[in-house]
Length: 62
Image (cartoon, rainbow, N blue to C red; front, side, top):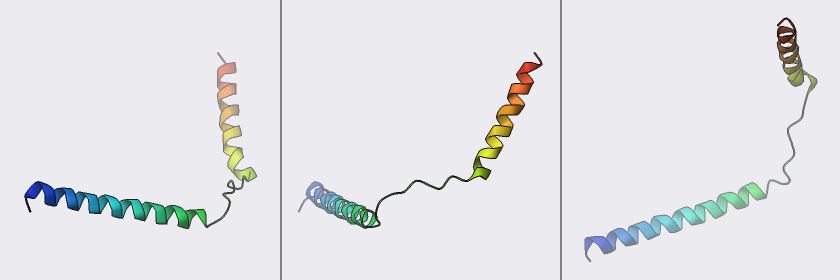
């Protein structure tokens, strides 16, 4: 068996392994159920409001 044929067989085997592993991972992730958005708390929004008020007061002084 020449070298190029051996490399082609090894590359094909790696490709098949990666394809099957990908399908298994997708199935595992799919079985977890529906994706829900992350909960939004009031604390996450507070710093954004403070930053925007600081910038708006900065531009009012111009």
